[in-house]
Image 1 (cartoon, rainbow, N blue to C red):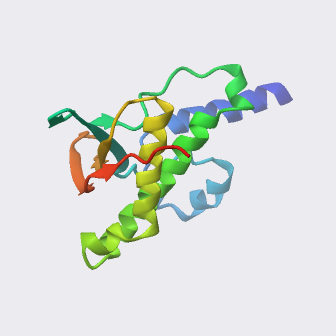
Image 2: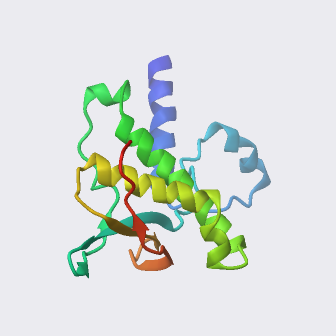
Image 3: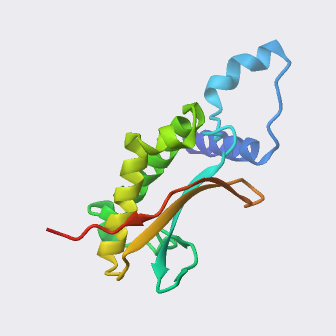
Length: 167
């Protein structure tokens, strides 16, 4: 009997999650909202900030490349040790903070003298050295990818930077 009641309860919850969510206007039913979980964790996804870079080849600039390539499939070890995912998360937070600072800055030059700009420059330079790309100069740009259309909007293009040699 108890198992049938539990199955009925969870079946009802599952059925409700499949139905389009609507406002409950009946006061009596409003009391039961606490028993039915809401699986909407976020209202709607926003724009995704992305960081691209390009290096200067002899005589011309190369094409824009993402700082991080596409996600690879996950392994069991990634639950315990995943430095690339940690770096991606840190970069995403930095990009969001940088976009806020860029919107609040009086001009692009003021933003270019700030900490977020310097950190973005250091991230790109670190990735260039990590990938052992032989480059003397680089640029980076910040774009936002809108959801769900996937359109890219350019927010910032840096000036040219010289790759600093390791000491």
